[in-house]
Length: 439
Image (cartoon, rainbow, N blue to C red; front, side, top):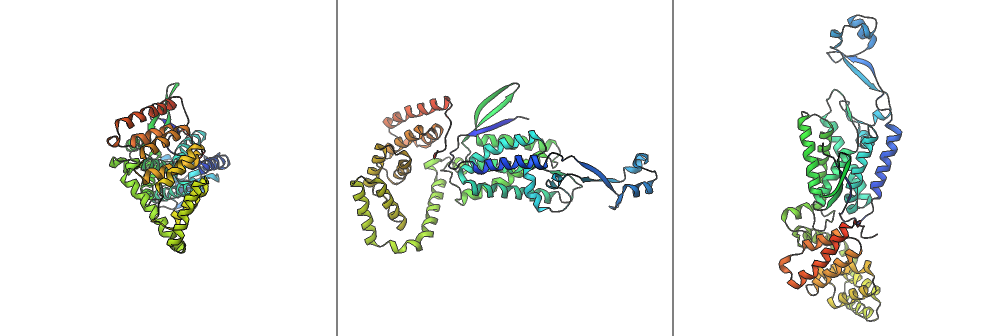
């Protein structure tokens, strides 16, 4: 089987992978505590053709012989052995044919059959978790990850409710659900991967959409070749099938912000700022915020209060008290959704922050200026690209340039972009690590 090992990503990371690391630690602890003797089994009873369970002694009496070694093999085949799991860890795996065991829906995703099983799963959990937790934060990520694992385990235990026995374990089903989320939320972002060919590993970038396609296709092929049995490949595919609709639901519900680089925008051929779907979701989120704050802020929206705040913004800018000007404007925007920045005010604040090199504060203001005003838009975009390059985000800068509509650019503007793109490509070739925006 082709083995592509992901270890990093160029997807924008807005939250540190706190929960991802915690999940890895929990998996290691559970492995050391409960997974060292999973093969401890014993045949304690036999099941007759009619379904009756009898002891070894009773079986010997029925078909003759003093012990099991003396029984007629032909007669013995008519009776099914009942295997009893002796280790505690065996009760934490997802058992088949023994009814519903809800605790196993959680515990099985932290159980592993050996060190290689554990290490392999944790590498993939790390890479997929970077993307998903990077967009959701640790709390929502934890709920989504464990929730998808529970849903997949419930599905599998239901399908195997009348099986003769068996069990499954491992985090890979929940991890494949995470893979589905990365495909829906960041299809054009890339994984940095290792391909093992003999003794020479090859490293390269591969788009997440292609990565997901390769792994889903491989698992489907091997599942089909295996007679569609409930094996590893079936568990992987079921995890992906659970995660894919979850990813779409969160995307369409506006519960995750993909900046217009999601699967729907990719399918429509319009991404980034040109994504109609992405802009629609931004508008919906803003409307929800405004609706939630209407009652709270109704008393602060009188024309007199608004006029006073606008005068105070202008005065703060004149006095070079830029932080105060921004704070007052934010208060004005919060109390009245129809009020927006006055362009001279916003432009003056941006220029002041750029002059003082306060880049962390200026980036969101530049993005607001680009969204609100046509005048000076290209100049603001150039500032934004330069700031991303300075913050070691060359891949993000290139994606932003690619999303710009060439038909709307003047020849002189296209020439201004060329050295910036060349510098970004040079940074990528030099191995610059894509850092989180808040680091």
